[in-house]
Structures are given as structure tokens and as C-alpha cells.
Amino acid sequence: MILTIIAWVLMFLSIWYVPYRLKQLAVVRKVWLWRVMIALIFGGYMLLLHKGIYTDDNAFTAVLYNILGLLFVFVTYLFFFLVLTHPLQLLKQLSKRPIGIMGISLSVILAAWGFVNAQSFITTFHDLPIKGLDRKVKIIHLPDIHLGTQRGESYLKEILRVIESEKPDIVLYNGDLVDSDIALKPELFALFRTVEAEQYFTTGNHEFYMDTEKALRLIESAGIKILLNEAVDTHGIQLIGLEYMNADRETYDAHIVNDLTIEEELPKITRDSNKPTVLVHHSPVGIKYVVESGADLMLSGHTHAGQFFPGTSVIRYRFPMYKGRHQIKGTTLLVSQGAGTFGPWMRLGTSNEVQVINLIPAS
Picture 1 (cartoon, rainbow, N blue to C red):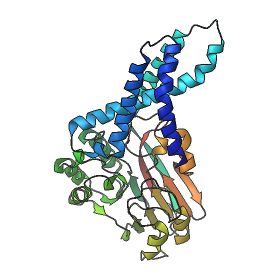
Picture 2 (picture 1 turned 120 degrees about the vertical axis):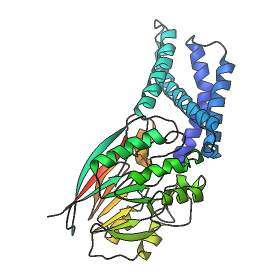
Picture 3 (picture 1 turned 60 degrees about the vertical axis):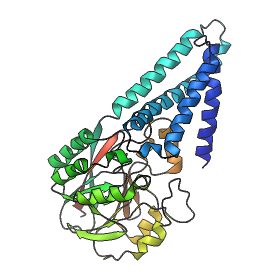
Picture 4 (picture 1 turned 180 degrees about the horizontal axis):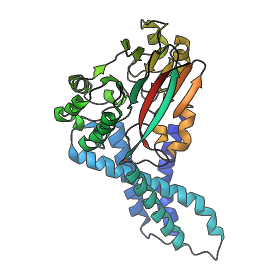
């Protein structure tokens, strides 16, 4: 909540400060025009996000959403640059205009590089020893693909090629598989039928911001089993899939979509404590209750590892275990950076990630 308030304050401050500082640096003349443009960028983008307009099945909205997102980041980076270089005005002999031009150029370069970096993904490999496992099990973990305004057929085919080459036993789509109605096309979801491995899906928060019923229907029709707070036995493990929920009733969550909590729902799931257990939940929260349940492994995403600066600097305050592997007593937590992006179509300091997980019998 505090971070959200700070973000809004900085946005309003940017509308005033960026044009003011650029005029000081002799880069712009019409301060009012820049203030109007920045206000429209921030206001328009926040309207699309917070009113859920970006989820519409509308090509114009999709293009506008992505353009405004990149402009939003450009102005944000320019604001930080101008604030950090403001003390240079004390150096009277220093020419002012080059500072402003440098700020604009650097902000454009960073936003452009972030956009380019967001067009591809990396594949990471993780060998995780699991007690009680009889044989090796290969899992591909794919949270946060975000099919919609930014991800479509070509990107999904690239991911499916990795699945085909790795030949996993299980593929896990761990929430936010789709984030807008523009992606709810039968021909797109038909591509999942080419996967030979078992496929499972758990809901993320974004599936609840759109036509949820249609999304779940298309996912199921693609041969993907939806796990809603239940366990299945497969390949010698107990696979528990939780729908998106908060950790407990006390923990803050900016994305509340139901009244469920891990604290209350996890104990209701019937399971064999003697079998290896892999728990799948979109967000890396409630690890305390997962450890208490005796699960061997928890797989999560949701955080995008902050996706780009300044998110990469503040994400740890919301999610202390926001990426990578963590060991909490007898439970391993593995958090993905996410296979796609949301919001501004860029990655800076992070990468889209496809996780290939080899569960191996522990000695």
C-alpha cells in the first residue's frame, strides 16, 4: 500500500517537474504542452489498467495500451535522470542543454532496449532432489505467459518448441496464462494440443480480470487439466494445485480475487504424507503454511522479478523471495521470473523465463 501511494505521488510530481526541469535546461519552451502530454500518458495508461479496459477484445485498445506503457516508462526514466542530475546546476560553467538531451536520449535507449529484451525468453535448468522419489521426473514450469495484448501465436509457438525439445513428463501453466479477451481464440488454444506431456493449469490473478468462464473453458478444451485446490497422483508425486488466493486473512494482497487463503484451504486437501509432494501456486506467498503441510517443493511466479527498474529494486519489499531457489526447512521454493510480461512491454534487469526442472531422487 505504501509503495502504491509513493508511486502515485511520484507520477503527479513528474507532471510538474519534468517540463520545469527541461525548460531550465533549455530543451523545451512550452512547459504547458509537455505537462499536458505527460498527464495524458500517465492518466490514459492508469485508466486502461485500473478500469480493466486493456482486457477488451479490441486491437486499437491493445496498441494504445502498449504504446502508452512504453511512454510511461520513458517519462519515468527521464524523471529519475533529471532528479539525479539536478545538483549539476550548481556548476555554472557546465552547459545545460546537453544534460537535457542526454536525459531524453538515455531514457529512449533504456525503454527501447527493455522492449527488445522482452521479445525473447531464456531457458533455465534446475536439478532438485526430492525425498521418496523413485525416478527422475522432468517438469516445465510456465507461470505468467500472459497471452493477450503482448503475447500471441508466434511467442507461444516458441515456448512449445522448447517443450517439444525437452520432452518433459509434466508441463505446469502456473497462472496468468492469459490476461485479456483478445487472446480467447480457439485456434490459439488448439496449439496446446500438440504437447505430448501431461499439462496442468492453476489460476493466477489475471484470469479473474477478464472473461474467466471463457478462458477456463478454452484451457480445458485444449487438453489442459485445471487444478482447483486439489491433488493428483502422477509420475510418483502428489501434485497439488491451488487457485490464486492470499496467504491468510492478515497478509496484504493487492490482487484479491476471492475469499480463499492458503492457511485455510491447504489442510482441506486430502493427501498421502508418505509421498513426495509438489505444490503449485501462482504467487510465492503462504510458504509458512506450505512448510507446515510437509510439501517437498513449491513452485510459483507472479512477481516477474520486478520486470524492470525501478520494480527490480522494490519487489523484494513486497515479496522477500521474489525469484530463484530458496530452502525453508524441508521445503524448496522455486520462483520463476515469468515466461511473459504485463504492463509496460519491456524487461530491464530481468528476463522472460522458461524453467526446466529435473526432480531427482534424493540420496
